[in-house]
Image (cartoon, rainbow, N blue to C red; front, side):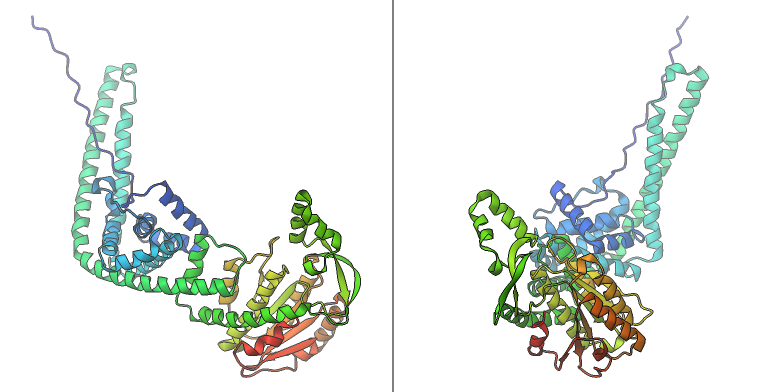
Length: 524
């Protein structure tokens, strides 16, 4: 009698898992770290990434690939089998940028330069996003197909994972019927995986065919955009250097902040004009500040704390000869705690905090705005160098919220570039109300940090105030012991009448040049 051979179990199907990678350009840990630092420091990069992710899958990886294409010294592409099919469109975009003649010109400015490469990536990403929104590359059906492929990838991945997990069930603990049911379920899942993979291959093949139709068009458009980016990058870099030289922040900006500065300066004629104006005014202001220390009919008054090296008591200088006391001297110098003598008979100029009320009403548009902000930023430079607090209050109508900025709030009185740009770019327009900003300035002077401060009021003077309010303001000014200096921007319509009601001194501007700015800074 012949023996019955045992039934052989069907061989287990082995399915190739989909790649997890959506990046086309190979990057190392350093490249990824640089990119992440730029993203963290640049809100604009994160914003364009978030906006792009709503239209195209893998838009974030595309931005990183563009950055690596411009930043890295050696460019190596990953093989097609190593990248998800739904990222095929990204490869077409990268090829269009890489293969153009303009690539070498752009790369000369971005190679191993974090800020320049990041700024170019940001501008290219914004241009690319704009073209996608205008359906210059893809129509809505094509974009829907891309999302369908990504969903199909997720479905294939889930089914392969479920099929592989079925093998983890211990068959020795199952009955014969249970084993048959499990085997049947595996075969069914294997069939589903095959079907899902076949559908994904079909969709991918169709996508490749569709991408061929717009490849030439995309190449021409992106290469033209890359040329514009190269020109804009060169212009933005020069303006950022001028801006940094004329309006120093007292700190070394990280690449992400330089990226933001370049982005905001690129193509902004108002900021370019403002930087040139501040440069001229700063020259006069610095020259005039040297005259502050000229003495005439002075006498010793009392001992105080400060950082005036020319008025230190003799025993303070002895500390510099001791290795331990020298460090304490430096600390007390930074904290303005050195023992010095004060003088009577000389006007101590610009020793307290500055509170600048800046008119941003519609009547201040154009050259008036440039002039008023140039004065403000020049005063800020004086405050930074003299370690004095500086608060800006930009106002317009009574219904418009005030823009209140503490320009140098930290211990070392450093100024952040972003805060300067926020001040320079903000212009609310609308009507004019003097009472609201001056009330805010009074509240500021009541704070302990701003005691002994003064108010600088910059406007064209076209406003009226309530007589009772003006009387109360003068009484408050007398009680707090501060001074209010008004700077009238009298280019075009202007009025001195209202300013005379609450100002201690009024200076006027006749022309938009640096020469007339001299006397403005004598008091400060």
